[in-house]
Image (cartoon, rainbow, N blue to C red; front, top):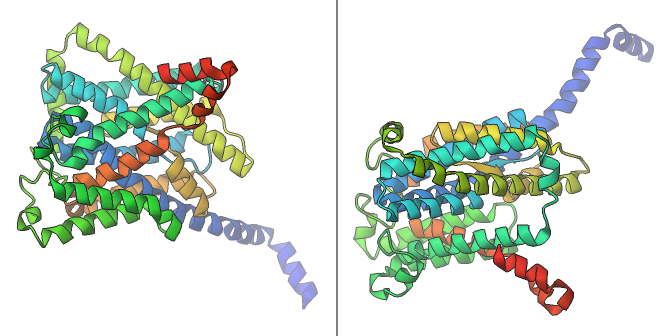
Length: 418
């Protein structure tokens, strides 16, 4: 019987090969599926929060556009970047540097008297230019140089972005009307809404303490759930919180202020009113954003290499990231980068290939379509609480040791300057 069995295997090598391939493929597919799904659960709430942060300066009705921009960003980046990139397990999604640069830009132009429609187009143009710059970086071979940027410069960037995020989220945590800056919000306590503060503090506390309780469910998911429960718990005491229309404490319906297609059409229409000065003003934020996104991506790739004993192709990855940001901006989504948190969740969940990134992009779109009514009820203070914790974690405290030695005081000066 053993001899016949051996002959059977010998006479049908293609069948045996097929069986071996399937046995190897199945674990990969399962790991990539769960990894991509877990990564989506981490990336999607953060992306919605980032989108709301960027679009809120345009007016309360545009917060829903921001949520949708975050969703479209997760989808487009998740589908395009892994399809063109070469780094296994890397998850690309909207990120904090993009939120910091674009929200600061939106505030500046709205304060300068620009219309919301023109700012919508300018935000899209910044994303497009940033993607073009990234493709150029990869094409001319700058990928190998960007990751060697001096540590004090990178530290200053990360800390600066973290501080900008915290400053932009404090007014949302306090529940003050849109348009008030950090100091204005702090100095007008009569405008604070204690319900939003309670919800934000509960969210931040769960975000910080979740990892000490369980690592099975990502902290951002637990924090999001805790914030929503706290909000509806307060709604039992104040019935006005359970009204969606005109409620500035929640994201609001996804069709607030008109359809997203109308907003996109408005962006194209606003092209007619652009002048050369406005176009020139896009270069600095686009260049800054492209460098930040590239550093964020390559930093994540280096960490992945160390953990998986692999080696990524920096230039190919930058081209892929640039193309992904181009596609995301065209469809109205946020730009992004290879994100550390979602990538590590993807890795720890068993992902082994780039297919996990595709799963993350597809599942984000399906999840958002099914639960769009739930997204409308997400408290703005919950998203603010999540982002404030993210901003605090981005602040690099290592440079504080630079002031302990005269030899490194200059490095500390570089960090502060950046």
